[in-house]
Length: 620
Image (tube, rainbow, N blue to C red; front, side, top):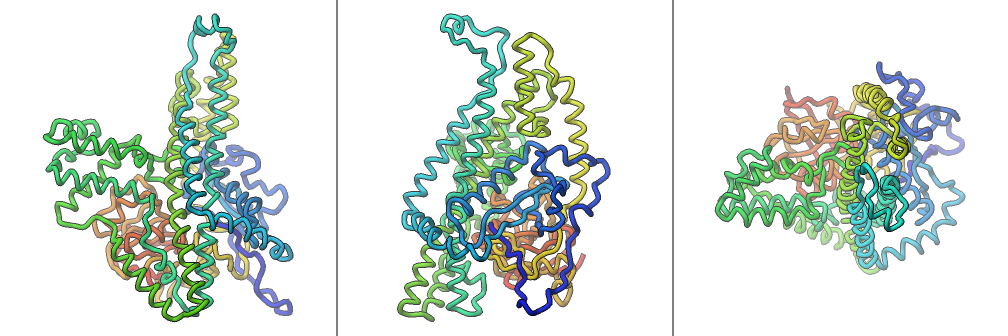
């Protein structure tokens, strides 16, 4: 995640090519009912074109991480993530060609415009970048262990925060002790601390992430140099088959499914939508307690996992919605009883990795071979973090964060400020603090708060705007793109290449036969019926043997990867979550198609060629 080179590659004496453009932000019409949408977000986030720059810069929509319209409070994920990404590029590591990414919200969706380093400043950053990145690479294991301690301590402190209801009067013990505070300060202090702790873990999040990409890209670039014509997938294969903590929640479900079959307890999973009933059937069964003990042991920490991506306040976490993991366990039990293999094909992945490494290594000798081995080993060491950070931050940290936000919201519900705990998401985080003082003041002086008379109608007005914005899919990009996109992070993570941008603009028709084209993200060719998914809530609609078509997948969709035959996404490159997970599950994948989820319909027969980046609609 870093910069797109904004400059054309034509020589100085050649005419600049005339480029097609995406719409300007100011040209896009506001959906009916969404008028005034800008006022829902912090002033510095919404496209207002005050300087004219919004209609000049090239922006792309990051629907890979933020596929849905933001409610006002939910912008916190985008703000913290992209700001902290930028600080590590710009202030910590001094990545030579790339600063951070400017980001704005337009019609409810997040758009990005990478900030390049002026060419004349790149060289001066190189020595300092090498010194700083070198420190991490030379001490990777010990620093990563320290990272886990820091992140876990932040989560533990966040878990300990509380938001108690205010009492009718302060306890007499507080009079005797001279405490001289009424408890409202706890609400405000803990709210501020909750925001600070969330921000803290997002800063930790990026301490290693871009280094993981850099190590892989360094190896990638070296392979391209010494093996002209090597496929991108062959390079990715050389680091596959690693043990990732992100797969541990899914592995725990598989283990629990196998234990249920071993103990003969399949019938206890007959109706997993009834969580209490399911757990009760296990408790009543012979040896059922053995299974329940193992189930409860798995929950900490592995049920701090969402079927979403952690950036939205309504994402459902396994810990809070146990019908989700129980449903996945039930399906694994069904597949085990049918004689299917449910584990990832790690042995096959490792064998293929070894074969490819040996095959290309035999082409080198001497210093070139030593360099190849060293760069591959560094990439393999750093590569797992590219996925593992998701569990610790997007899933675990954000799961606790949203749970605490709802706990605070219950204080407002009890005070009549709004009707439902999720209504707090329609306020900005600054407005929540104002509402806290409104509540504290009214309680302290014995008067009526203003909030109950103001917020219910205002929340409904904002809900209407969010609903209206959600009726329209975002433009994939805005304004005139560069003549050529060369920045490797953007291509690898998002799948935003020169060719894909041209396809989005209609400069080509995909394949010569009308096929949908994208990034060849995971090899293999399969045919099957499409299942188009636009929300994580639809995951249980996926049937055995279907091909998943989605705007983007989340790392937490692992339990359905054993059911599907291939994956197709609208956005994402070779290092996107969808691509990495599909390679680790041995599934073909085509990512970064731009429009597959709106072109393909559920039930159509399609052919996915993950080796060539092609998707054909065969019939239906």
